Length: 112
Image 1 (spheres, one colour):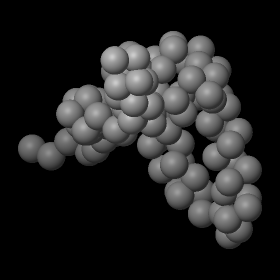
Image 2: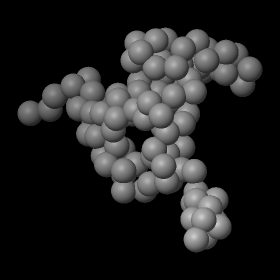
Image 3: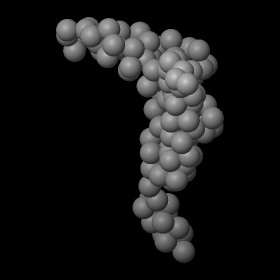
Image 4: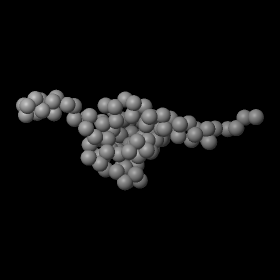
């Protein structure tokens, strides 16, 4: 009996168990919105070097994590967890796309 319990535990994917300090879906959505805005900002400034773009992104990423009170490890573990749960990730990205669409619409010229 003990052996079968150990085998079940050993065969269970670690992503099925929420990591300690799992970010909420709202927190993940907020961070991902900022990440996508940072990526768009970098693509707009048209850096000629991938290394330069990576340096700028890392700086922006650090500011995103600081703004959201999250460390890199917690974000990565939460991202991996939600990535292995498609329904949760879909719900998160639904929020992300809705918020990004609102931002685009707010900056688009109004036509009458």
